[in-house]
Length: 294
Image 1 (cartoon, rainbow, N blue to C red):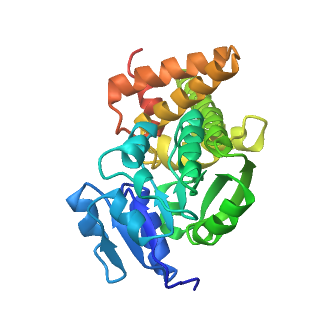
Image 2: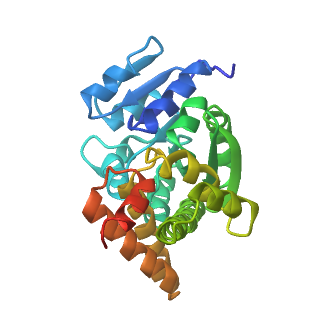
């Protein structure tokens, strides 16, 4: 148990945030939480949790504040909007943005926090809801040594593998680029399965060939036999979130001036899938989309 008397602030109790907050509770921590959803608040209504009406209320009560929010727009609203965190931050406080935000926005907000004597680090996660529930997420962290020293004990109560990535914003950049590589691998896997199906190949055997050969990737190992071939399509990551990460990767390409043609194609195809199936469809349903008479 790593419990401490100092409460941790937690803002954002969604699909990933709720199990992450529960992981902190299991490790003996108390929480001051905030979420606009009454259902989300009710799901976390436990003895070691109290709720603040606004993000500023969380800042009043906690030295370390975790954000698990959908995107940079919502992060900016929580930080700078009415009742936001930023005006309430005190010297020495730490904000940990664990969502998938735009690196440039992360750097901007970190500078605003630093002007108040506070710190902001990016610490996006890799792993499904299952890993969030188990407290075994991989967590990338960008920030200076002092911020890392304050963040590490809290992060270890939610994650199994912690990787320091460099300056603020670097973790959000690496997360987006990692998810681009994953999206490209899953897309290629789904296309290959559709071609193998058209040739009347044994798809289970083809999956074995992929996993024993150079085509092996995380999608072939954890999605083909588990989710795609049985038609379950419950991999635990939404199409809309995949598109968002690809758009972040696109913003990185624009910032760096790199002409990422494969990324452009990937973004277009995932965008078509979201338009056809909706943002809440599972990411493995890219396979279903490719078989829908395109």
